[in-house]
Structures are given as C-alpha cells and as structure tokens.
Length: 330
Image (cartoon, rainbow, N blue to C red; front, side, top):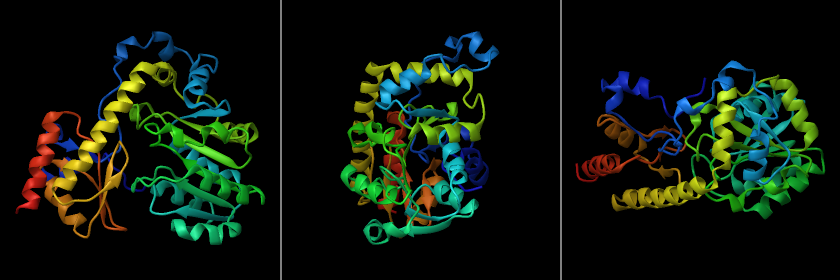
C-alpha cells in the first residue's frame, strides 16, 4: 500500500498528541463539509440496492457537461481498473504525480516511463498510454487544453489513450477536457467528488470516455458499485449550483490566503485553490517541526517537498501562522 495524506491516527500515535488536538492539512480536500445531515438520507437508500435511474447520472451530466459517464466507488476504482483493459504496453506518466497511477499500471505488467513535460513531444509516438493529473497533484501545475488534445491525437492515431485525472479542477472548470471526452476515442477523464465537495468519505468518482470503453469498465467493476446513500448525497451536491458557486469563491480566497501566508515566511509555493506545494530542501525538517506542534502536512521525498491543505477556521489559520513564525525565527 502506498502512503497517502490523511493518516491522522498514525500521526497521533507517533507524536503522542491526541487525535482531536491535530490540525490536519495533509490532504487537498475542501475543509468544510457539504451541509446536509446524515439524518436526511431516506431509509430506502439504506434498505434497497442502488438503482441507476435515481437521478444521479443526470445530475452528473448537467454538472460536468458530458453525457458519457460512469459513476465509480471513488476515482481510485478506475485508476486500478483501467490498466486491466489494455494488453501490457508502454505507459508515460508525467511526474511527479499521484503515485497510485504509476503503481496500478506497473502492477499489471505495463512498462512505466516517468516523464517531464518537455520530454513528451519527443517520446509520445513510442507510448501506448500517456497519463497525467491536471492540475497536477502535488505540484498544482496546469496543462493547456490545446496541448493535451494534440497529444491525444498522436496517441489515438495508433490506438493509444490519453488518461487525464481532473480531481482538482472543479475550481477552474473551464480548463477541463470533459466537453470532449465522450466523443473522442482514447480520451479518458477522471473526476472525484471528494476534493471540491469535501465528500471524500462518500467514495464517489466518475469516469468519462467513449461508451464502449465505459461498458468494459462497468463490467469489470460489477453491479452496485456505488452505495445508495452515496448516490443520494451526490445527486443533491451536484445539483446545488448556488452552493457550488459559494464554495468555489471561498476556496479561491482560501487558496490565495494560504499562498500569501507561506510567502510571508519566505516559503514560495505553487498550487491550486485546494492546496499549495512547497519544493524545499528542508522539507523533512519543516514537516517534523509542524508535526511536533500537532500540524500534519504531506511530505514528499522526490523531490523534497510539502503539500499544505487549507485550514477550516480562523483558529486553524492562527495556529499555522504561529508555527511558521517559530520556524522562520527559531
């Protein structure tokens, strides 16, 4: 199992700090829950097997702007399943990125090439699949849609795929490839409900691609892949356009605030509305400094770097600022 952010219980045990005393900034998930109590979920969502005509798919088509989709038990399900839908081949992964992608393709016998952006044009005709995260996790870098479509055209001409994980793009939906996903063979786009909506525990994502590929993926995942309560909550979140607009504005403001706070302490970052990424030779030391004060951020080894998520309230902002101040002036 690869290591991920959000392992708060392990941190609490390691540092001897009670679970409730931590400020968890280790994920890129919106820090505010979607405002519906569990009690609103009807009993039938728990008692009956999920049904595909309950309105979820239509709500997703309206929100994402693409009709050819498949609900998933988290986009992680597609990450693990897609490599099984192709014979072993050569897969390029734009690195660094979410580590589960490379691990899944490697696990099923594909040859992996970790590529920098500038290497793609020279090597793409040797690839069967090109995989990237847009905007990238953890660096936050964003890829131009025209460039991605040019890469897709070269891959598709040889029966290849372009797989784009758009888990963090909800705050900038104009950069998404979704309007094109259903009608272009070999273009696969993944989305997650967990990040922007703050519903990671619901475990819901979507795959967008040509219908024939989605049918193969659905057969591999089997029936009732998404639970009834998750379908109920997700349908309402996807249809609540007013709340989505409020959240998008709040996240943009919080992301800019986080970048400014880190810059104040001479920590220059790049990122998205949901997180900031700091490439830093002393990343491990700063991670330890924060952890000993009950603040968990995500540590990466290659390159040495940290990813900071968003505090949920003013107390969290003040706590982070104080800890960074102690680092800046030891």
